[in-house]
Every structure is written in structure tokens, then in C-alpha cells.
Image (cartoon, rainbow, N blue to C red; front, side):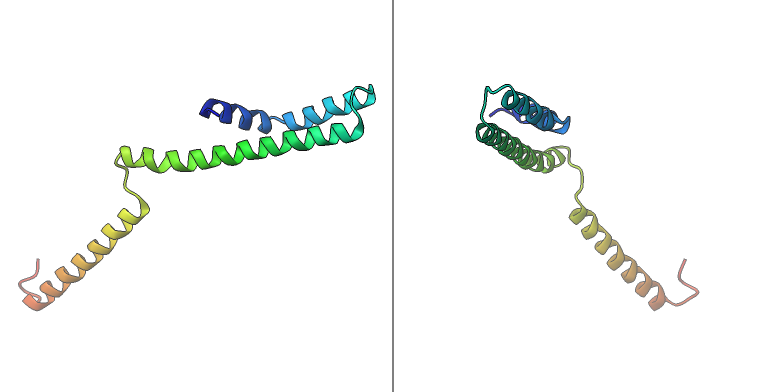
Length: 107
């Protein structure tokens, strides 16, 4: 299944196609073209496929986003946290050095 198919299935599911499919199957049952059990089975199968497609799409998107951010060289939260920690340590060292020099030598 291609990414396009996954996106298409997810979008269609998002627009209420499941409900339309159920209505369509109900109509086929009313006209006698499907039995109630066949209709229920068809709706269930289609719903399971839509759920599976949505799950697959979520997995694909979850994999694409980190790779894209890495290619863009955008810092992650971990990177920013590490830099913040380094800044705090450096600030503490600067303060300690200023205090060691005395009040009249600090700028």
C-alpha cells in the first residue's frame, strides 16, 4: 500500500465515509441484495481496514517527522535541554569566578 493510498483512506475515513458505507450496505440489505449478516460482515471488514490504514498512516507519519527534523537540523528538546544545562553550569562558574575576584574587580 502506497503512502498516497494510506492518506486517501485516512482522509476518506475522516470525512465520514464509514457512515456512508454503512448507509449504502443498509440500503443493499433493504433491497434484498445482501442478507443482514452479509451486510454486517461487510461493514465490519471495511471498518477494520479503515482502522488498520489509519494506524499505518500514524506509524508512517511518526517515522517521517523525526527524520525530517533531523534533515532540517532543527534542535530537539533533548538538545535544548542539554544546552540549557551547560548555560546554567557556565553561569554558575562565572558567578564563582566573579565572587573569587572580589567586588571591586568584577565588572
